[in-house]
Length: 438
Image (cartoon, rainbow, N blue to C red; front, side, top):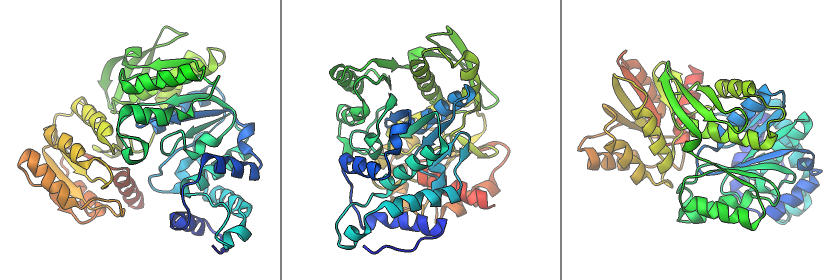
């Protein structure tokens, strides 16, 4: 491997996208060793570590929102990005600049052992590991109060699990996703996710009343961890109006708190509740007030989750079976009385058969369309057409590109139609990128 001259943000991003061609997954021990090479930036941080199948990014957004209202400075590292890699790094309310991205990239780049790499030896981080190291350097420089880290895949072997000084761990909903890496049952996947648990560090987790919960509780008992379950019993849905959701959270310190979510996504009540309980466990009622919680939840936003990108055009990042179920629950309850139009596409390494079946059999959509995504992981749209027809007897219309699909649907949209796009974060990313150019 030959060291290159990299001087621009574009060149840095291109290098990172090429990383999978010349490196492999490294161990957590390898990640820990390289963190030391970088000066152990994680040791100066108070880290909140978030794992799970669905809802991780949303929980991170709600955590950041509440802590900001309470006067704390937060850095948040999430994945994936929708348009630009800079989206993965947030300091307080802002996404980092391309200049900050390049500076951190070069700091990691110069720390690599290029003599060893030139001999095809030595350590080189994977794409995700590289971004994680950049996050640690960026957040160290910002001198934050808290660092919120979302795992990339799993938990036990995830690069983010190499950090020291965890203040709190959180496990969101567990579902059947990435089964080729994490296991084929909820319990096996929960075991991998529970790998973020540290002895003496409290855990807040989503209690689904299933085998995943049993596994998480077992891990907590083995590691002497105080476990704090959260479920739908911890909140009460109140009302839906003006594309927002009113609900009431049962607080440990303030009895019932009336809250408002600026979204139509019903599943965000679960994620907001998980975040609030996490703040209560972390802060123990000392500095975060009821007013901080109310304002933080109301102002929080997480892109690509039932996001209205144009009037009555919503995009949702649902990309696995549980995500699609949550998406459909939201559509059923959104109160729209006109025609619903669906634009979908999925990647071939997901359970697309089940995802398409659920969307097709829901009976929620007056018309449905599929578009060819640019990603190499995208499935052939004709397979989706065949699956849709099996369940509905109807043909799906196919667009050659996402851009063509969006332009056509928006041009033809009437005042009595609402468009929904779901099935893949790649789909959401392409739509947002295209609309940002317009």
